[in-house]
Image 1 (cartoon, rainbow, N blue to C red):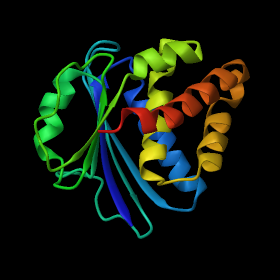
Image 2: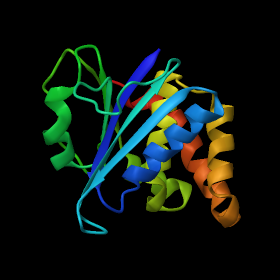
Image 3: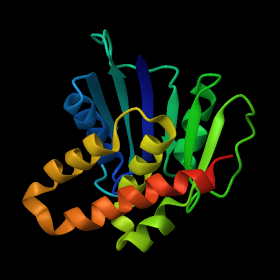
Length: 181
C-alpha cells in the first residue's frame, strides 16, 4: 500500500497542519510517511501545499508527480494540481470556497463544504480537521481511533481546543456520505 497525497490551499487554512495530522497518524499505525511542505514567504494568504507519501514499505522519495489524492482548499490550488491526479484517483474540493465543478470523469470527486461544516463544529479554523475526517471516511487509510488519538496528542498542550477539533473530525467523517459524487 502506498498513498500519494497533495494538500494545497492558502497559508492560514491549515494545509501544512493537515499534512502533519496524516503523517503522525501514519506513524501511529506503524506506517512509513514523508511530509514535504512548500509555501511562499507570506505567512497568511500566500500559497501553501504539502506532499505526503504514506506506505507500508520504505519510501524512496517524498516527491510526488502524480498524486492518488488531491485535497484542494482553494481554487488556485485546484487549478494548479487537478491535471496531475492519476486516473482512478480522488479529489476533495472545499466547496465552501470553490464553486467550480470538476470536468474530469476519470477520478472520484468529493465536494465538501469544509468551512461551513467547521463553523457548525465551533470554528472555521477547524476546516482542515473537517477535511481530515472526510478523507479518513473516504479512504479508510487509518482507523478513526488512531486519528482521534493523533488529534488529542497534537493538541495536548492546548487541551481546550481538543473537543472542538474532535467534533470537526466527526462532522467531516459523517459528511462524506452526503457529499460524494
